[in-house]
Image (cartoon, rainbow, N blue to C red; front, side, top):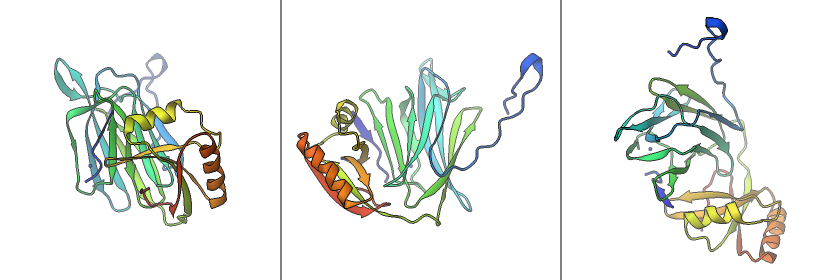
Length: 241
């Protein structure tokens, strides 16, 4: 599994019996959870990631394509996707079912967020993560003709950034091993780790709000044969060795 790119990136609906259906309501900002949608799209590809700053929000656009007769053209529909907001560190996790990272995909660096794209050996996208420095609200807009996704992000100043305690697994040296470990291992029920890929470094960790809880979970992991490290940091800081 390869890790790519840590930053340096009017359809008419017809209702029953020909009666025009109402257009879907505009997406509203959320402060937790996820947006999901799309459908199965053989040959789907991510062809680019673009960033644009507006007065009070940042827009990230995911350009989507599909392979047809050896050429990459604009996607006719949205492939199955999920865009989820996660905390500690604050970030957005983007997944596309079966979509590949196009060989000539363009990731803009101007106004960009720090990001990581993780792919399998055949360039299928495993996960994309975009990191923000503060708590945020977000919404996702589906754009048609050709299909694109726009992620709008607004920073929040009314949410305090806490101190957190991360329990990291040690000895995980590559992305493939990290995903295999998380997907296959039977951890204690109070240890549900995330995988963070930052450049050439991979972290497997879960975050807690007190040192006592983190130490208790680390002790369970040590008894199960895992080597751990407990570290303290601000909730918007990225992990480090």
